Length: 399
Image (cartoon, rainbow, N blue to C red; front, side, top):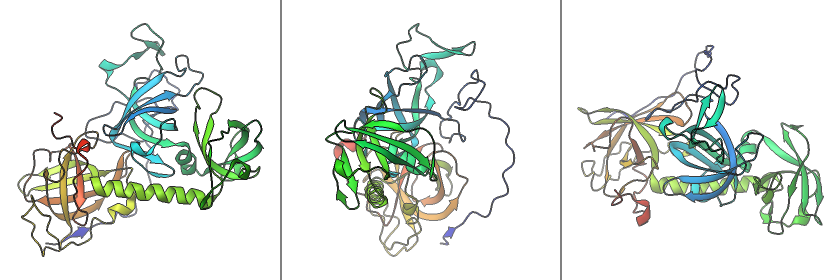
């Protein structure tokens, strides 16, 4: 069997796109509706709504969480909770690397991009260009209908992704205060901002833990915050004083993420199915370390094992197992509920929000009912063992 791996060619210059027919955070026309998500499809660029706040409740198995939204000048946004869930293709970042919700400590200040829940379940509506409550109460965050999260990241990840660092201006250990100015590309982006230090603030420098006395004016740092929604700009929970400490934090989180994905499989949408040839096309989700996709074409002489015995030992083709998953990415029983076969093709496809741009075709011995377009699956390259997860991580028996 021939194995094909294609690489995307140089793309043509992008053509001018018409103005979106949906509202964005930058829209001047506030009467436009927000983009409505379509099941089984990735959303367009810049269609999500930005919301930030403090994480104070989570269910990492169901990928659900609650934020206390940041205070701003919008009436109805004063510290009220926002319940949300990660979209199946939603990505999470912590300390500058992909993460799972369980990796993020409670109390961490987060930045998120969200879509609205279905219209029939919404609390707020637009009338005459104004946001008004359907139930005649304003004691809810005006962001409460944005419950479907595309991306979630801590302050470290948010600023590092934009090539931003904080330059320390002043440190007052007696008053437990720190003033810093955010810089991007070596230039200030605003005024000096005051933060609170705590006796429990974790200080990291090089390969070691430091102390509050190691914080000096002129240092360029990254910080994670808490209580950013109640008292000023927030309390500093962790501060990284130099590039070495930041790289170590990112590397550690990256390895934790790789272990997590190898144990649970690469998540993606079933894009197409050829029933006659038993070929399943999978487009993988974003929020996965790209290095893991490089393991897809690795040859493996090992059989896929029961229950995929049709691919026996000696078959050197790249291959793997497919498991049916739910929207929260939980599988049912990944050891027993899997089918797979040879990888026929690996393609690069256009990147979209939520999409990794990596797509594969797998010829299965048997197709399961869950291998249908728009359904969610997890894929295990044959070089990854399919292990038994802790009982609570399987959805089998919860129906």
